[in-house]
Image 1 (tube, rainbow, N blue to C red):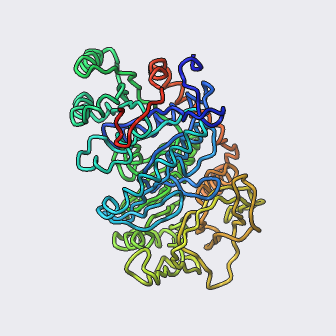
Image 2 (tube, helix red, strand yellow):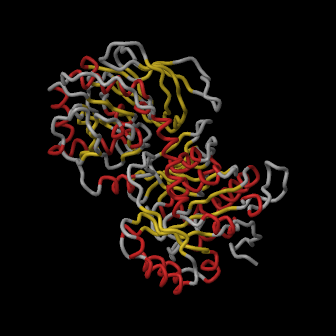
Image 3 (cartoon, rainbow, N blue to C red):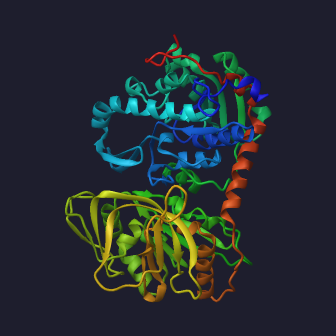
Length: 544
């Protein structure tokens, strides 16, 4: 069927025609565009099409490092994985990383450009960004059979449309049919769809070819009168009602997704099933500028772990382990710990024998001092840290974004080092003021995954291995290391080790296939294939 419907692709089969595109836009943020894009990517790949994802501009603190050491939004990395291809910065040429209110670091093709205040970014940079976006999309369309594009927020933001590079103007440049996604779980789904269409200009409205209603819970027959009304009211088809899919086992894009997962309850668990009723209690400090929280996604998948997030001392309790995560602003988030009383609670927890882990910014906080001579992170040149490791961190303008591989010992546990892979993404450089053994031995890897440099030491441990830190994001995605660490915690409780290792990669692949099967079963794929045709567009984003 697809050979009859899909136009002849460009690039890989020698055609001069650019590949067709399909675009998902939403009635609002966090309606499920990213996951639905991943689902469609895997469906098209299953159907034999070389498919690539694209999002022109993403705003997220949850990063993904490409094989060549560049930084893009986590969602596009996940979507590339769904396509079974290596991610590149062409899939997300512009990434905005919020640093504080109204200020973001602008990352262009995987490297930091500069910090921009929101108005200056819009007025000074968006015109230049337009060309960067078009060129990246053109390269993908030359290489792949199909490009699935994800919009951002809502296309009905009338105050932003004149310089839009993420929604309807982009759809016009790409000649993309648009599927409008709405989240019924929020309520007001019909109003959100009709309201969005009413605000769009006529040529934009024409580009919307149908609707997807996402996250439905209940009896779809009860929704049928509303669906009929919507189609009669708009003249456009409802292409599918996608039931809510629990326990998907795929990472979230940003903290809005984390909020939904926690249902607004700070300190509540993301449950594991427990082993004979014996679940480890692992807490993560939810910093205001929390980044790369996907570091902890493997933990609730383990059968003997209950994961929770805390924001104040009264929520801390006596966990089996406490984790200080990554942050976009280490200094300000350390001050948050100090001002809320969490710092005192954490130090008391350590004195009483608790297990404290720091990853990236959390690792920097474990040292004695944070030095910022160029005022890159804050207006403070020097800040006292927690003082648990004999280290100090100096913030520098150059950002280290690399994939790494090597070996790691589990601090405080007997046994041989485990092979590990992960990535680094930080602007600080940590140095030790006293000699300190490093439990991690890592090296930068190239696009082929092979080391490009001799291994070097990373991280440190103290208090008999009960306090340790590392720059390696994804350290807990390494199955052997993670299981050994959890069994160390179990042993400290007097429980038997589990020893059985969860295979995360196999589980993740199965999750992609489960997602694709679920969406395929509830979406009119034949109609979607009929929509995918290349169209000529003018520079204003309208078909002539």
